[in-house]
Image (cartoon, rainbow, N blue to C red):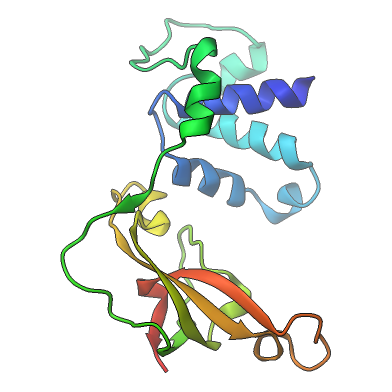
Amino acid sequence: NWEKRVLAMSLAMGATGQWNLDQSRSERESLPPADYLSIGYYRIWLTALENLLIKNGLVSAEELKAGKSLKVAKPINSVLQVENVPQVLRRGASVERTIDGNARFSLGDKVSVSRKLKTTHTRLPAYIRGVSGVVHHIHGAHVFADSHAIGLGEDPQWLYNIKFKATDLWGEARPQAAWVHVDCWEPYLVSA
């Protein structure tokens, strides 16, 4: 039951607009590795929610420890009403955007994934860095999660599906899949 409450609280607080989806994801993925790998899925969500509540001035660490409010709460402008939850979850929110300019890459182009390590949140998987693949699909422009997660706005970028040979990623010892597809934003890619 506590796991259901954690998920409900996370959804309800996300709907307040105090932070965005990418900031929430970043908070979960930025936990110390020892915690992230040992505390369990919903404990990760709860810890990230507590961190976001503190960072956004909605509660203090003292209030969390006490389990009650110790001062007047910060006003919230948007509240997700329980009767609206099913509709909100079904509808979701599109992250597709319109931007000026054309996509840099075309279907069939050979690209390589940047090796540059970021010191901030990224949706770029480490296992594809430095590997070459082929543009399989162009999804259009989407909110760039890397910028959005650190408060730099939506910064829409072209999003591509890149097709990698499984052997290029994991060598001949892992032949279970012939191909692996990964969605990559344009700033992750260079011409191969």
